[in-house]
Image (tube, rainbow, N blue to C red; front, side, top):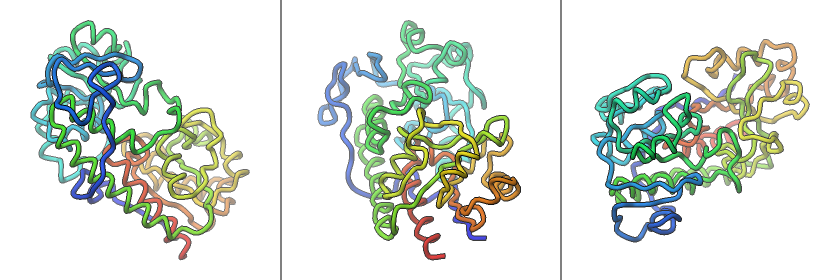
Length: 342
């Protein structure tokens, strides 16, 4: 069996060297923050159709999920965090000490009461579903309490594809915007330069890919393994696929992560199945469980990609926007090159 496995703790994830940086938002007003100007407070920016005013550089920030926390650690902001939550993936050894400095308010979804007990002066979330009345509170509610928020532009509306497609430039802009909010713009430039270097590495490897491989990105399953969640259009997996000159077989779906059927996947006949190796603990989440299912199911076991072990395994955090996302490009590119050489 030939399976390409990449460790979840990859070198250069939090940036070591490189060049090139995306621009921050356009101006220090409702349109964004000027990347070339000194940050002045109060600072107002437009974020996911909300005007957000930040009176001062935050000193007691709370992140609602791990990927937001890791971006802040990459920017050297752990000492300015009052708490974090929703820790779902292994913590890299390179950031373990910094992560341990941040109070874990809950290992699940943070609720409003617990959030307010931390006395935050800024709240940062990668997911729209976390900033709701059922969880940490709606953005308008927090803003009324003088707690500014930032929501990743990748998920302004839950599961809705990003208009024009999600890009790494969007990720770089997010990193630089957070750096501007915390008045450490030079740190943002350094992190983005390292991220760009990883993207460039992936593009170099991609030059060796022949033809147009047909891909299915298998992220997870619903309650039943018969309804897999796969990558559709408008997310980073689609962007990676396009950058590699490959084809995402579900680019015609209505959402970023549609639930489909194995009958439909078999009908579309992928050349390669990319398996998300998730660590959140749900049934069927790991790559090993996914392979066991694909090999044993009467339908999927007949698929050419399954028979010939054409799998590429990537950590689940590579598939969602995070400081790790750029690693998806060289990981999948190298996987495709290695499978072609099989």
